[in-house]
Length: 171
Image (cartoon, rainbow, N blue to C red):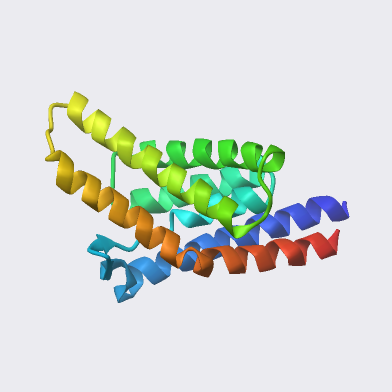
């Protein structure tokens, strides 16, 4: 009974953290700031951090909620981003439980890999749909966003680590 309650609290607090990061990006000027010429996107780091700290199921919940928030902001085809983030966080949670530790370089690896995969899939699907983008500006934008996310990832990693440690003590 206590373990179920702790898991529920974990999910609620992680989803609140996702919501806070989303509100900071959209309601303030944080989302319109540029770092290294790229748009700041801290929201992508949250499901990677949650999946690193917890099991794949909790990571999937955070990923699904992150994708829903991305859909609310109108940044893609509806339904695709929640599916991507849910699968990404599930996969990241499974890999991190087996091969990675709860350290910052593991978070960087998951964030950069997930962003690279998503932007690559967006480019491929846009090409399949007949839209063409110049390759060099697309790559500059993609790598700039990844670099900005990596530089600012401690602002996501550290609160997630503190939440995970707090819930580990509650067991």
